[in-house]
Length: 125
Image 1 (spheres, helix red, strand yellow):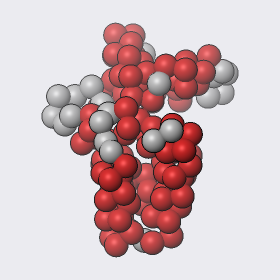
Image 2 (cartoon, rainbow, N blue to C red):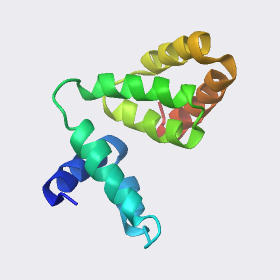
Image 3 (cartoon, rainbow, N blue to C red):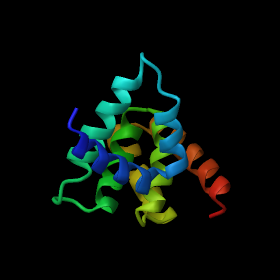
Image 4 (cartoon, rainbow, N blue to C red):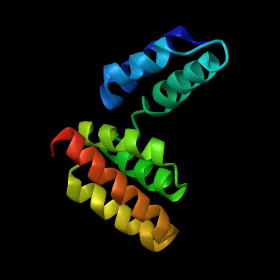
Protein backbone atom coordinates (compact mmCIF):
# COMPACT_ATOMS: atom_id res chain seq x y z
CA UNK A 1 0.00 0.00 0.00
CA UNK A 2 1.20 3.49 -0.88
CA UNK A 3 0.81 5.21 2.51
CA UNK A 4 1.08 8.72 1.08
CA UNK A 5 -1.67 8.07 -1.48
CA UNK A 6 -3.78 6.36 1.21
CA UNK A 7 -3.50 9.46 3.43
CA UNK A 8 -4.40 11.72 0.49
CA UNK A 9 -7.40 9.51 -0.26
CA UNK A 10 -8.43 9.42 3.38
CA UNK A 11 -8.43 13.23 3.53
CA UNK A 12 -10.52 13.56 0.37
CA UNK A 13 -12.89 10.79 1.45
CA UNK A 14 -13.45 12.53 4.80
CA UNK A 15 -14.08 15.90 3.12
CA UNK A 16 -16.62 14.46 0.71
CA UNK A 17 -18.42 11.83 2.79
CA UNK A 18 -17.86 13.21 6.28
CA UNK A 19 -15.22 12.25 8.81
CA UNK A 20 -17.63 10.37 11.07
CA UNK A 21 -18.82 8.07 8.29
CA UNK A 22 -15.32 7.40 6.93
CA UNK A 23 -13.67 6.97 10.31
CA UNK A 24 -16.36 4.46 11.29
CA UNK A 25 -15.79 2.49 8.07
CA UNK A 26 -12.05 2.35 8.73
CA UNK A 27 -12.42 1.65 12.46
CA UNK A 28 -14.90 -1.19 12.03
CA UNK A 29 -12.95 -2.87 9.24
CA UNK A 30 -11.83 -6.38 10.07
CA UNK A 31 -9.33 -8.79 8.55
CA UNK A 32 -11.86 -9.67 5.84
CA UNK A 33 -12.85 -6.22 4.57
CA UNK A 34 -9.85 -4.08 5.63
CA UNK A 35 -8.08 -4.72 2.30
CA UNK A 36 -11.14 -3.36 0.49
CA UNK A 37 -11.20 -0.23 2.68
CA UNK A 38 -7.52 0.32 1.93
CA UNK A 39 -8.01 -0.26 -1.80
CA UNK A 40 -10.98 2.10 -2.03
CA UNK A 41 -9.25 4.79 0.02
CA UNK A 42 -5.98 4.66 -1.88
CA UNK A 43 -7.16 4.16 -5.44
CA UNK A 44 -10.70 5.49 -5.60
CA UNK A 45 -10.25 8.48 -3.33
CA UNK A 46 -6.51 9.13 -3.58
CA UNK A 47 -5.63 8.24 -7.16
CA UNK A 48 -8.91 9.10 -8.94
CA UNK A 49 -10.74 11.68 -6.81
CA UNK A 50 -7.34 13.30 -6.19
CA UNK A 51 -6.66 13.87 -9.88
CA UNK A 52 -6.77 17.46 -11.15
CA UNK A 53 -8.79 16.74 -14.33
CA UNK A 54 -12.28 17.20 -12.87
CA UNK A 55 -13.54 19.18 -9.92
CA UNK A 56 -15.37 17.42 -7.10
CA UNK A 57 -18.76 18.75 -8.12
CA UNK A 58 -18.38 17.20 -11.57
CA UNK A 59 -17.12 13.93 -10.09
CA UNK A 60 -20.20 13.85 -7.84
CA UNK A 61 -22.53 14.40 -10.81
CA UNK A 62 -20.90 11.55 -12.68
CA UNK A 63 -20.96 9.26 -9.64
CA UNK A 64 -24.64 9.86 -8.97
CA UNK A 65 -25.47 9.04 -12.59
CA UNK A 66 -23.37 5.87 -12.68
CA UNK A 67 -24.42 4.58 -9.28
CA UNK A 68 -28.08 5.21 -10.07
CA UNK A 69 -27.70 3.44 -13.42
CA UNK A 70 -26.17 0.48 -11.59
CA UNK A 71 -29.03 0.63 -9.06
CA UNK A 72 -26.81 0.68 -5.98
CA UNK A 73 -29.05 2.39 -3.36
CA UNK A 74 -26.59 2.25 -0.46
CA UNK A 75 -23.95 3.97 -2.55
CA UNK A 76 -26.50 6.48 -3.89
CA UNK A 77 -27.38 7.55 -0.37
CA UNK A 78 -23.76 8.03 0.61
CA UNK A 79 -22.90 9.91 -2.57
CA UNK A 80 -25.92 12.22 -2.35
CA UNK A 81 -24.51 13.47 0.96
CA UNK A 82 -21.10 13.79 -0.67
CA UNK A 83 -22.60 15.65 -3.63
CA UNK A 84 -24.21 18.18 -1.29
CA UNK A 85 -20.84 18.58 0.44
CA UNK A 86 -19.29 19.17 -2.99
CA UNK A 87 -21.69 21.98 -3.82
CA UNK A 88 -24.47 20.28 -5.76
CA UNK A 89 -27.99 21.51 -5.14
CA UNK A 90 -31.21 19.55 -4.89
CA UNK A 91 -32.01 20.82 -8.39
CA UNK A 92 -28.68 19.52 -9.75
CA UNK A 93 -29.35 16.10 -8.23
CA UNK A 94 -32.90 16.11 -9.59
CA UNK A 95 -31.60 16.78 -13.09
CA UNK A 96 -29.06 13.96 -12.86
CA UNK A 97 -31.76 11.49 -11.86
CA UNK A 98 -34.11 12.66 -14.62
CA UNK A 99 -31.32 12.18 -17.16
CA UNK A 100 -30.64 8.69 -15.82
CA UNK A 101 -34.34 7.83 -16.01
CA UNK A 102 -34.35 8.43 -19.74
CA UNK A 103 -31.04 6.82 -20.64
CA UNK A 104 -30.71 4.04 -18.05
CA UNK A 105 -34.15 3.24 -16.72
CA UNK A 106 -37.01 4.69 -14.78
CA UNK A 107 -36.95 2.10 -11.95
CA UNK A 108 -33.37 2.96 -11.01
CA UNK A 109 -34.15 6.69 -11.09
CA UNK A 110 -37.31 6.19 -8.99
CA UNK A 111 -35.22 4.52 -6.29
CA UNK A 112 -32.67 7.32 -6.35
CA UNK A 113 -35.38 10.01 -6.10
CA UNK A 114 -36.82 8.20 -3.07
CA UNK A 115 -33.40 7.91 -1.44
CA UNK A 116 -32.59 11.55 -2.17
CA UNK A 117 -35.81 12.68 -0.52
CA UNK A 118 -34.82 10.73 2.62
CA UNK A 119 -31.31 12.18 2.61
CA UNK A 120 -32.60 15.72 2.14
CA UNK A 121 -34.92 15.26 5.12
CA UNK A 122 -32.08 13.82 7.24
CA UNK A 123 -29.85 16.75 6.29
CA UNK A 124 -32.61 19.32 6.80
CA UNK A 125 -32.47 20.65 3.23
